[in-house]
Amino acid sequence: MSELKTRQFRPLYYLMGDESYYIDKISDWIADNVLQPEERDFNQTILFGSDVNAAQIVDAAKRYPMMAERQVVIVKEAQLIKNTEALEKYFKSPMPSTVLVMCHKNGSVDGRKQGYVKAIREAGVLFESKKLKEKELPGFIQSYLKAREASIDAKSTQMIADAIGTDLSRLTGEMDKLLLALPENNRRVTPEVVEEQIGVSKDYNPFELRDAIVNRNILKANQIIKYFDENPKAGGLYALLPLVFNYFQNLMVAYYCPQKNNPDALAQWLDMKNSWYVKDYLTGMQNYTGMKVMQIISKIREIDAKSKGLDNPNTPSGELMRELIFFIFH
Image (cartoon, rainbow, N blue to C red; front, side, top):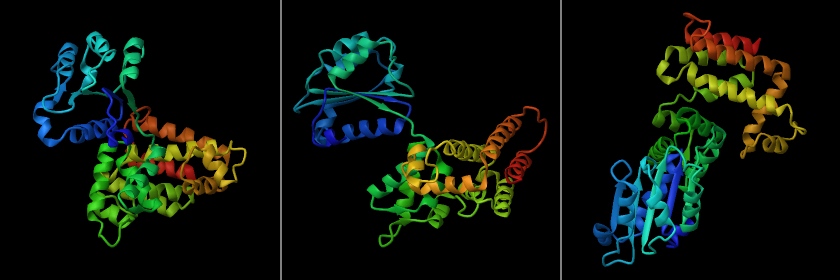
């Protein structure tokens, strides 16, 4: 993006990967900024892999621009193109006056096509858009808001991450909604703002359940479980189990840290960019022994299997979650 914004354009951008957000971000920027509005009618072409073949894409890319310095050809659904021989030949000698953008979503170029991959790299940019991991979401949320001159506290960050997940298109859409709701004189996202705009309870949410488990707050944990059982739309067992599992999985890893009482060393050991979250693992190691953590992980797996009907003909999900919470605390 830095290179594009200085108007250093390559003849080929091959954008691939499982995360469509970055692919759309780059291709949309090229569509909106490479050509002037008056140049686009004759020099900007949008094609779809479901409608064209490789030869038709090459024909479009080989055209000369009309009354403009360059033309832009964007191919969406490029993963649907079967025979790529004509494209590989074109990549080896691309038109310098064409900016060709290939949008290959839900996967990557077949690694066995080494000549094809090599031709792409030599012609321009091969960009892989990877899905963010759950642990990377807080950093993404904070950076996204900071770039738009807004701030957010840790609790609000985790509330959003837990409620939305790793779908970046939906996540950024929800954050844009939050930004619109913020007054000009107070650009800070709080739990109250998240609750109002996204519909996540600031008192009864996965983040608060996690906090209750970390601090062994039995009453609070059971109140939250009761709330989720009575409000299925707020999230249920399938939303809560991964959160609880991830915490105890990381807590088990924390026990193996050579300097487990050092917050910075533990953050690096757990591959956490924000050391604020490390305090939950320091507290967890005080409240749960390593043996208990192993037993809890085993119990989570058992509850997960039961929730999917294995050795469980009719126990409701709320009862299963209460069983897990009881096991964790006792």
